Structure formats: structure tokens, C-alpha cells
Length: 121
Ligand SMILES: [Zn+2]
Image (cartoon, rainbow, N blue to C red; front, side):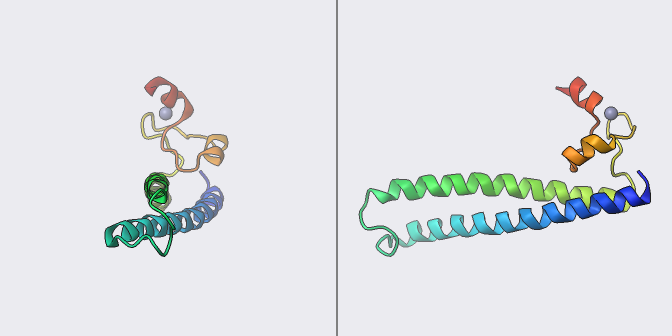
């Protein structure tokens, strides 16, 4: 990875980070809203009859799943920034070779090259 490559990938990661952060905040809000609603026992403001309760629970579960996924991705992005700082970005954690531009462009948070990935799975 040249310095120029790293700057470019940092920009890509930055964009993904901001997008991901927005999603995390969004899903967190949904999870919090549906949880508060249920805990307080006040459904009147949101739903008109008891049948909606099931939907709320489902919505919350879905939102929580997305939230967990986005937050995990956020952590991966954080790690990628750290690797850029340390100068290990783009290097396979298994064999120590370059992961390659093409694969990094597709999956910028990856820490493993294609060959090792195949061997691992
Ligand atoms: Zn490798």
C-alpha cells in the first residue's frame, strides 16, 4: 500500500463510517422507543388496539438485529482506521501478504486475503 492508496482507502472508510453511524443512531432510536413504550405500558400514543403489540415486538427485534449488525460493522471500521494508523492496513493477518486493491475496494474492512479466506472456510 502506498501512502496515496492509504489516503484513498481512509476516505472510503470515512464515508462508510458516517453512513454506518447514522444507521446505528437510527436503529438505536427505534429500539429505545419501542422498549420505552412497552416498559411504560403506554400503547395508546402509538397504537389503537392490543393487536399492535405483536408488531411492535417484531419491529423492535428487527431493529435490534440491524442495530447489532451495524454496530459490529462500526467496530470493524474502527479497527480498519487503526490499521491505517499502524501501517498494517491491506496486509493479510494470516500470510502477511498484500490483500490487493480489488478485494479491499470490495470489502475495505477485510483483514484477510482471498486465498487465506478460502482456506479458512
Ligand atoms: Zn493471506
